[in-house]
Image (cartoon, rainbow, N blue to C red; front, top):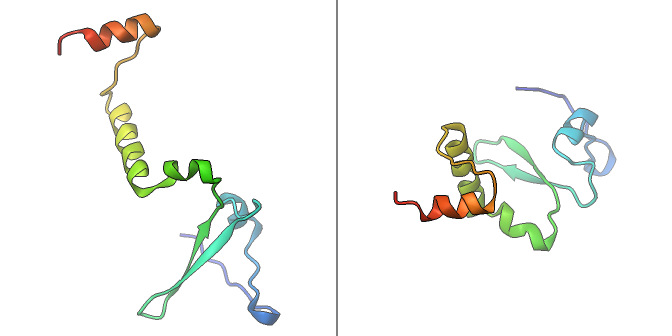
Length: 96
């Protein structure tokens, strides 16, 4: 866990450290930070990077779950590798 102490500037402005902005892509145009005040008084900042409208499907919770499942399958070796489209189609037609 990394910890920083931030000074609140005039009008409530906070300056995030450069390394945090870069790591979370908050230097990009349209980047925002979501502030959450929890019931226990803790204040959380969550980075939000603007996503083009035609790519929002990829960042949906459902699609990200499927991405994590696919990554787990690859890591566990539950994949088939082919040398081209013909071999790929043969693999699909092969009995299970």
